[in-house]
Amino acid sequence: MIVTTKKLFEAAYGKYAIGAYNVNNLEQIMGLFRGNIDSQAPFIIQISKGARAYTDKIMLEGLIRSADQVFPKAIFAVHLDHGDEASCYDCIDSGFYSSVMIDASAEPFEKNVEITKRVVEAAHKKNIVVEAELGQLGGVEEHVKVDEANAKLTDPDQAKKFVELTGCDSLACAIGTSHGAFKFTGSQGLHFDVLSEIQKRLPGFPLVMHGSSSVPQEEVARINAAGGNLKGAKGVDADQFLQAAKLGVTKINIDTDGRLVWTRVHREYFRDHPENFDLRPIGKEFMAEYAKFIAAKNVKLGSAGQLEAVRKYLG
Ligand code: G3H
Ligand code: 13P
Ligand code: ZN
Image (tube, rainbow, N blue to C red; front, side):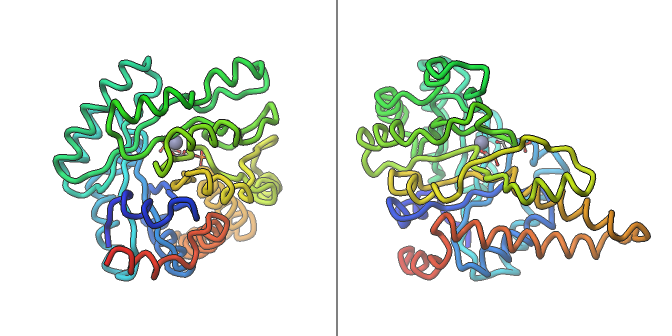
């Protein structure tokens, strides 16, 4: 059942976070639904502009609609990840997405407000909810001094003003994470002080944490042992998810970790089965491993076991 992120956030706020997982293909979609059903978790399936262009946006829509039939107990939102204005309007018009993200965070504050406001107006007319972003991820790097790094984090006063001016439904905040497999190169962790200040100014308002893959060291070691080269890869401590959830983070975005599962499974499989050229055994193995990964991640997020409570909440 496709629902809006708004409803999922209402049910989760202050208690746990909903996993928002990026998908690109059939195997990821099957593994994702299986993992969420196995762990009894509501979830957000998110689609980037790159994912929409990978095959065809209609293909992904078709696969997700089919998964909804194959897994009739699943409760999930369909979300556009890091949209620009044009892709937001396309998703709003499609009648398929229940939520879109407008990412105008690279623009100056006023321009970000202006663009976000336009998208919110269009989305709300169709009961679609909007995630916006303020602050910039990925700037917290080793060679950047802490002061400069902090300058890129979301400013709590601006966050309050931004939400009031735009009417957005949730806000992605920069609190020290970055996208990809090489985070915290300057060894900074999550800035809970900043998060707590944002929550004080926006009590009850759902916050979003991007760049939240954990980049498990065991996974990195296995990939490297099977011919990969991901030296120095590092991620977010998943044991901090619940602390973030208590401070208002209701959506936690994970893409890179799923790509690592894919890479490890494929590298090891072809190393260990050099004679194989059949795509199905490896596809099956990936789906099973991805489902296991999702179920374990949902335990860290606190969303595992919440499915029936959410169903009740939805009425
Ligand atoms: O934040 C970006 C997501 O990881 C999506 O990545 O644009 O390569 O699909 P992508
Ligand atoms: P990761 O690269 O840490 O998985 O972040 C994904 C993300 O934020 C998608 O929007
Ligand atoms: Zn992101």
